[in-house]
Amino acid sequence: MVFIKKTWTDRNTQYPTRRILTAIEGETDTYDVTRAEGTISAEGDAFNAANMNDLEDRIESAFEIITGTLTSGQTSITITDTSINTNSILSFYTSIYGVSPETVSVTNGSVTLTFEAQESNMIVGVKVEGSY
Image (cartoon, rainbow, N blue to C red):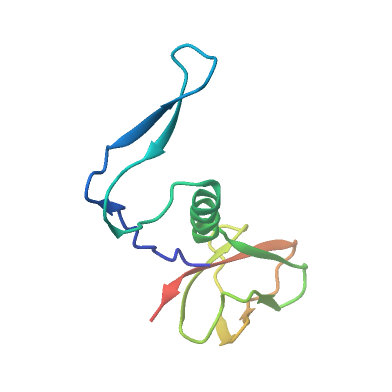
């Protein structure tokens, strides 16, 4: 799957660093801190686990290579993934040096590659580089 860029937005406030300190009763030098930023003109994107995990997932998927095994003697393999569509820009990889697909047929959700028959099993990889 291709990396989907997210446009992050800053939090914009009238007083970005202003806080209210409220002393904790019965404790010395211990306070609760509350934002006192004034007017908020833009909430911005939170720095939190959900946003960071989403970023990690999107980066991982951008580097993902979808693989399958072409069994020795076979000449075609169909690899399926929801990220593949007829507008996809695809790169192909094989575990046998110098072997490339002879034909490529793409539909929404799959790509079928044909090769000359090989004497041993071959791993075939497809990477979705983007779309046009």
